Image (cartoon, rainbow, N blue to C red; front, side, top):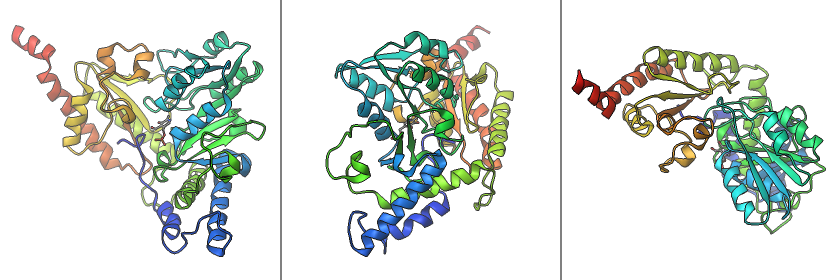
Length: 391
Ligand code: PLP
């Protein structure tokens, strides 16, 4: 239950990619037939991603993933003297890029969030300045699943003459991603959060936006991202985009047991209610915010999330304590801290994230395993030992 860390490849994605590793392995820049075949496959994948985003194919730049897309968006449009507004709950791909930009003469403002982990229009209004060039706020948070009011924020940014970027990595394959409806100029995607391979991604760049490349080399991706294309990976991303579009339209999946969007939301709610029915001093972080259907961030007071993650892992349940991308770090989650959770509660929170392929049985197992593991850890926790000694 760690699909926000990465998703499995859908069988159709593997099948679409397979020939491009084996018999059809041409370089998409070669003039010969093998090269032209690879080029046609890249073009088809670009069309599929453009259909998912409701944009032109020429506005899609293939990258190595969400981190590169976020960096390209920020470094590609900002120059010394510009002001960047982003939020305190972004993924490190944006946060650390923003910090690096301050060393290059860019002024950065990090917007606070509400206790529910959402960014408010009033916070953005107060931060906009005449030199604000870019506003970057994610569409769905990776830790809590909270959906941000991107359209409203984008309208405010545009009214102030700024561009708007959204990191839609955790929204892709979960929410509609029509760039015109969202009102964004730049949008980041990552393949491995939407059933395509790790190391694939895309950046949508509205036609009128002038983007400087981060790398220098050939004229691939219209000069915006040089380097020989990862043809098989791009084909996989294109197939996943096509499947995401069909899934969002409610079309049945060819994978037996795969959930519809509504069924996934019901499954997550059943998981949450089932666990919380059996544990006290526990709750849902961002529980009152609009959330993507698959994500559940739960706190269990008096428990160390790290210990809980290990205990559950030993029982065969893979969950995350905060963001997987920062596991190994001892700091409490910056997202939960920004929401105003005290350090102890932030350190007592875990994330369960379901995929379209998570089964009812797996949810039943989690409903049994999590309360049992929490009870066991609480028995061992200093507070409970103290209470036991006094009673
Ligand atoms: N942005 C968000 C919201 C993410 O959740 C992640 C990965 O967890 C990234 C960006 C980075 O994407 P990638 O792993 O493809 O570099």
